[in-house]
Every structure is written in structure tokens, then in C-alpha cells.
Image 1 (cartoon, rainbow, N blue to C red):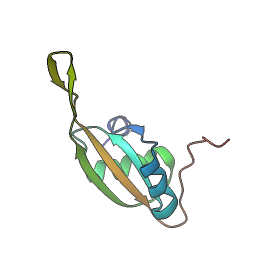
Image 2 (cartoon, helix red, strand yellow; image 1 turned 90 degrees about the vertical axis):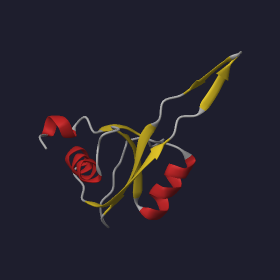
Image 3 (cartoon, helix red, strand yellow; image 1 turned 45 degrees about the vertical axis):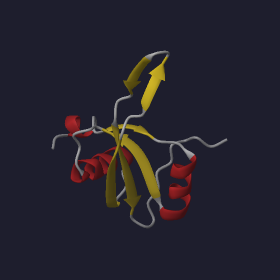
Image 4 (tube, one colour; image 1 turned 120 degrees about the vertical axis):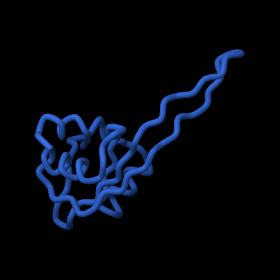
Length: 98
């Protein structure tokens, strides 16, 4: 893939308690990715954007929640999440230190 397409694969990092634990214990980082991205594209995008080596990528689809507003019922859109494990010695710093 060309670099322009790879730059659009990663939508945002996910910062949650579960994602923080995965980062500290398993050297994994969690990203929200494009719905049509596959594992190979996600790994190439992380290597391109953060200059690290990717060991393994796990992808899952998150279903949207059903919500109600008064008598109307609706559904939030689903999205795709990727757990990216880096090779030993590599790390991503998002610059969120205090």
C-alpha cells in the first residue's frame, strides 16, 4: 500500500484502564482503526507512523450499543479495534507524561 492510504488506517489511540494495563504488562498498544483495514495494513501503518517494529496484531469488531431516547430506540455505530504487540525493545510514547 502507498503511504497516503496507510496514514488513514489508524484513527486514534484508545486510552482506557484496560488499554493501559495491556501496555504496561504485554507491550501492546490499542488503536481504533478503519473498518476495512486488515492486520497487515494495521501493522504497516504503526511501523510507518511510530518508527517501531510490530510483532503481532489482533483485531476485533466492537458492536454498537442499543440506546433509547424517550420512546425512540436506536443503535450506535460499530467500530474496529486493534491490539498491536511490539517487538521487545520498541515502545511508543504518546507524550502524555505529567
